[in-house]
Image (cartoon, rainbow, N blue to C red; front, side, top):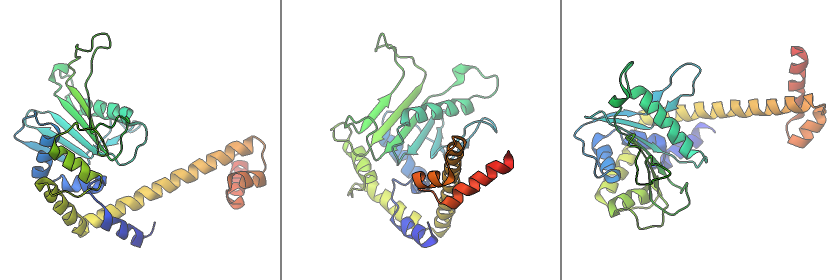
Length: 267
């Protein structure tokens, strides 16, 4: 993807793009109002915001980059993600995010009783559970007695911007409609839309986005190339000729022969 294409892409980005969402939600007022819409019963007076916070336990462990990581005055954690793509592993992603939140919440040798409430919120422009709900909330319960709560202070919420049920209040629905690309005259949505336009006009953020996208695309290309080479090696070891592999996989013959040559050098 060239620079001009990235520039055109930048000019069309909306709140559903995680980069733009993170920049807009650096505004504590806008973020606080969004949290009130999603968690109306949660009372807080102060928020410590970390946009795109990265966490990793060690050099050889899987890390995570949170979109919006928030702590309130009571130490409760609210983590919000704009999940654009349906990768099919949303529940497992939420499980991993929860474990990373818990790990960083306790100091060494602190009692588990010091763990505070945590809320993981995924905002999706798709329905991962295909039930038509706008709002899915999950807490731990006993399978044998659904009234018995585990009370582990962990809540996971999935917001579906394309829901069909009448299951959320009008203001939250207006936000979800906005995520889905629908205009609204709601006052909060108007403020969000103005913030999105200002974000796109920010030259520093535009450069940051383009640099990040180019790096991501390079990593994707490297990953794809590695996958192709691994597949070619397997087929060569199975005794298939370079010509047959190139014809079957639609790879350039020069690439297959390059892999074949590298295998001969190694052996």
